[in-house]
Image 1 (tube, rainbow, N blue to C red):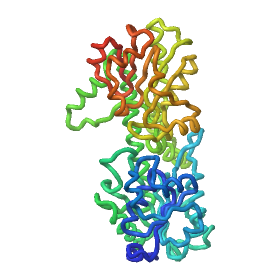
Image 2: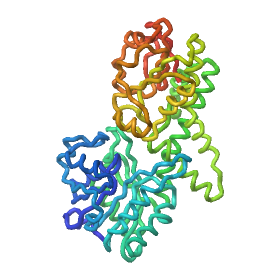
Image 3: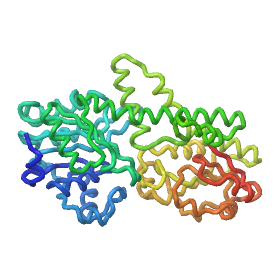
Image 4: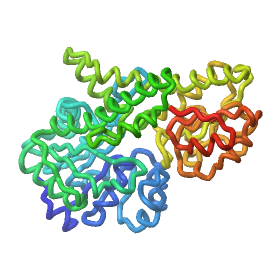
Length: 437
C-alpha cells in the first residue's frame, strides 16, 4: 500500500477528484506537502484554475496561483496516483431522492485508472453504507483489483462551510476511517499534514458516513423548530427574535434562527439518511417533519407578503416586489439548492412582478440553473414590498431613507426581513413597516 513517506517525498502523487468547494481547498492544502493531481470532468473549471482563478472564492487567487497543482480533465493521468480523494457533489433529484450519478461516475473513472497499492478515500456526503455497498463494487469491477489484497478504501467526510473563513479545512477536526488499520493510519497521517485541529478515527467507514449525515440533519431539525416557532409566534403577534433573545439568556439554550434553508448540505443530507432508513423499512418522522417545515418556508414567506399587500390595499396582480439576495446563504456566490427561488415562484403564481438582486451571485449561473434574471439594484424601484431574503454584508449600506425611496408609495413602505437583518427602531423612525420572520 502507498505510504505517507512516498507521498511527502513526492514519489507518488495524490489525486483529488472533483475541484469544487470541497476538492479545491483540499488540493491546495495538500500541494504544500505532496505532488497533487487536480482532476475535474469540467474542462472549463480546469482551465479557470490553471489561470489562477476560483469563482467560488473558497481559495483566494493569490494563494491559488502559488499552489503547485497539476490540473487535468484527462482521466488517464490519474493512473500515477497513490491516493485518490473523491470529493464530488452528492445532490438530490427533483423527487428529493439521492442523485448518485456524480459519486458513482467518479468511482468508475477512478476504478478504470487506479493502480495496485493505492488508497481510495471518499469525502462526498452519503448515507451509511453507500461507500462499501455501491462505490466499492464499481472500483473492483472497473479496476479488476480486490479490496484488501490490491487496494484500500477510506472515508473522511467533508466539513467545509462555504464562505466561513474562521472554520476552514485546517481548523475543523477531521474524521477518518479506513477499510483496515493500515489505511486508517495512512489517512490519519495524511490529513494530519494539513488539519491542525486534530484527527478523529471513526471505528468504521459506516460510522464516519453516519457522523457526517447527522451533523447537518441535526442542524436542519433545529432550524425547522425555530421556523415553526416563528409561524406560531406570528399568529400570536409576538416577535420571534425578541423571544429568542430572551430565551438565549439561559446557558444551555441552543442558538438557532429561523430562515430559508438551502445549500448543498443542510437542505440535502437529511434526504440521504431518510432514503436509506426507508429502504430498511423505517419511516423517519422527526427528520421528515423538519424537512417539510423548512422546504415550506419559501411558500410561507411569499403568502405572508401577499397578505400584507392586501392589508395595504395593493392589488396583488399588479404588485411589484423586490427581493434582496438569491444565494443559499450570506456572502457567498453559491446558488446550489437556494430556497429563495421558492419565494419568487410562489409570488409569481399570484401574478406579482418580482425583481431580484444579489451582489454575490453570478447572473449567468442564476439564469442557467433557475431561469432567474438578476437585476441591478437600481431596478428595485417603484416597489410595493421589499423582501430581505439573504443578509449579504453589502446590504448594510442600504439606509432606511434610501430603502424608503424605493417604494411606489413611501408612506406605505413594507419591508419583510427574513433574517432579522435590519434595525427595527431605525426602520420605524423612517416610516417603514418592518415584518420579521
